[in-house]
Image (tube, rainbow, N blue to C red):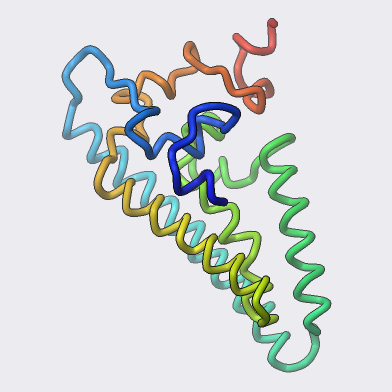
Length: 183
């Protein structure tokens, strides 16, 4: 999670580092500001639909926890299930792509939401370790969202050449990228 809030160039997927200036490669043409605004509005709308669904689904889990139906161990196990689901999203298939309408993880508007989503259940367990994980995940989410608002051009492949398929070097992208599949 720490590498999601500080710029690191090596061994970190571009998708989680695209918010930083050192990973931004402006296209040679002038950026179409109207198209950029339209893109950010549509992806943000989709992102907040995901957030709404996530909060509603977890609201049921939290409600069941407060009723005593789900114990602290159950909340921890749900966190582990979320972790496995996160791995499946990255390595096999991501259902969020249906809502987000993005090509791959590198261009995903919610790429760095993973830890906050994963650690939502342990927020209600308490204790130093669970709270520290949630706080760090929340910090990563806040930094991500602030950068989307302040530097939207870093998140759009029409303004950031580093996000184009032809420039992809992400090993996780082989399921979508024809260039990397051929290697």
